Image 1 (cartoon, rainbow, N blue to C red):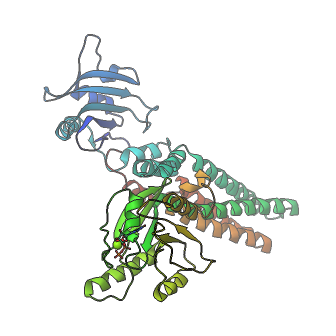
Image 2 (spheres, rainbow, N blue to C red):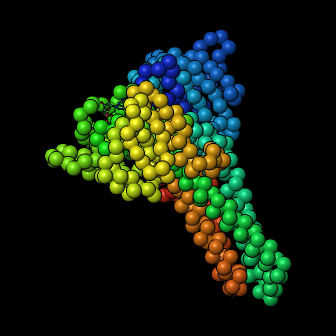
Image 3 (cartoon, rainbow, N blue to C red):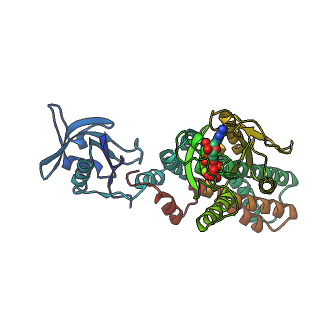
Amino acid sequence: MLDDTIAAIATPLGEGGIAVIRVSGPDALTVADRCFRPAGRDSVAPSQAPSHTIHYGHIVKDEAKIDEVLLSVLRAPRTFTREDVVEISCHGGVLVARETLAAVLGQGCRLAEPGEFTRRAFLNGRIDLAQAEAVLDVIHASAKTALRAAQEQLEGKLSQRVHKLRDDLMLVLAHVEAHIDFPDEDIAPDTRDALLRRLRAAGALVQHLIRAGQDGLILRRGIRAAIVGPPNAGKSSLLNQLLGRERAIVSPQPGTTRDTIEETASVRGIPVVFIDTAGLRDGSDEIEREGIRRTESALDRADLILHVLDGSEPVSSREAKRLEELADRKRVIVQNKCDLPPRLELSPDLETVRVSCVTGEGLESLRDRVKSMVWSGQVQPDMIEAMLNARHIDALRRASQAIDASIVSIERGDPLELTAVELRLAASAVGEIVGKTATEDLLDAIFSQFCIGK
Ligand SMILES: Nc1nc2c(ncn2[C@@H]2O[C@H](COP(=O)(O)OP(=O)(O)OP(=O)(O)O)[C@@H](O)[C@H]2O)c(=O)[nH]1
Ligand SMILES: [Mg+2]
């Protein structure tokens, strides 16, 4: 697959200043020679140009000018894919970009598949798999914290740790295998203890990464925060305040919100999906009952609950019951309408945040509280750990089990073949994270998430 040349529009389709067509592969420069006519006195054909130079001229199709462009010549291996690359900057219209691409495609290359440039970068050893996924995350990141985490991963910080972990496991495996080959020699007690120590340290690091990785998952997809509470408490007002715009209808009439409304906002750099819900009361009509069913389902799926109460009203018995039911969930009790005389009395051991959605008072404290709830009371965790995705965590879980099993196996004095099997499982699970042991299916699954041109 790598012996052909691929091309695609690398910029989003739409109106813009410029669009970039990227060509990569062994024939990239020949393709450029065929469809590019340099202009100016000292001009040279792309295949004659030195690496990392930019050339002015025209893209032609059947010798008819398609567009005036700048063409960059980037020779292997100092390129994103480690192949010869040509980048053509043409005018940024949808039609002109397509026409330029068509002119290139006719000259000996094919349209790239989604993520194929990044896949080549991986296959040619320019980046590892965790870094390839980070490319995707940098593109998709919608909140600043997530972007920074993805960028650090692209620099290979997670990969360094994982490589080290894998090396440690391979070292223990090598020791064990050496003894399988020489069955007369027993592992000396000292060596055995040293191996066990190394495995325990590896196991602890894996456990630590898994735990910290949970926070990373939250960072990646954003947390879901359900806004619930009795009718008229000010749930929709709170949603609007948190979004900074009038998204939901607010009115003094109880039962205004009937459907759930989902909107994303960044809270101190964390992407949070807020879900405004219908006030919980005895449903009188069909629509209202459906709304309440949706509220319940939003509650079930939420990572965090903002329980809004009207601070100017005593708490109803139904709401008191709700407060108890939600006691073991991650929640913030929001006492709204603090601009009015307080008439809400709650048990003193319930911590609340007082806000007013009319004056805006208390909203900053609420944002702080949400942030600290997300980070479980800690400040921002080590960024390296905030970058694990579900695939990484799954691999780490399997590694952790295999490491534990190998420790038990050594302690029990099992035949070393059995210990080696567990160690190989552990090393291979860890290797999947950086793509040392990735299957074709896994690669397909990852790269198909990319857009064409990346
Ligand atoms: N004084 C005062 N009034 C508020 C405050 N927040 C909301 N309100 C008013 O309370 C009423 C209800 O607000 P909503 O945001 O619609 O309440 P809700 O919880 O979404 O109500 P439902 O959708 O019916 O369940 C509106 O008249 C708001 O203007 C506040 O902080 N202070
Ligand atoms: Mg509402």
